Image (tube, rainbow, N blue to C red):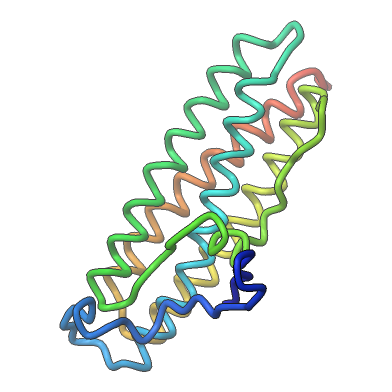
Amino acid sequence: MTRFDMKTSTVTRIKSYPPPPQLATPTELTPHEVKAVTEAVNPLIADAFALYVKTKNFHWHVYGPHFNDYHHMFDDQAEDILESIDVMAERIRKIGGTTIRSVGHISQLQTIEDDNDDLVSPEKMVKRLAEDNARMAKAVHDAITLCDKNRDVATSNLLQDILDKTDRRKWFLFETLHETKHP
């Protein structure tokens, strides 16, 4: 990963592996396995940060006849996403990798786009969050597969729990999108 330093006009690479010796937590995984898992999970953490901020943005800026329902749903979902960040980051540290260091590091790794629109309709908020949660679910599923291939059962299990919570958010958003369409 690279970072631009405004003071010196230089680009600095942000890396998560190998860690400095003081942060190299002993693990039963090989260095290759730790690197693979770290490089799979850190983008999930970056995407979780991006999705958290987007969800809170929509929580703060929702309007209209469904204000109360959406406001509470977005807040509940944001809390769930925020909780997953610490769990994933601490898991990376437990296996001897390092994780997110800054907003710049997040921006280098995130695949979920920021949402800076002045006004987003409630329906578009739900649609965008549904799409982002679907993207997140696929990335988590792919990371689970990678963890399994790299003998990291504990990270795989942790990600399975996060996937279940992501699928729940997808379900709620899907149903909210279709709430007015009855047969």
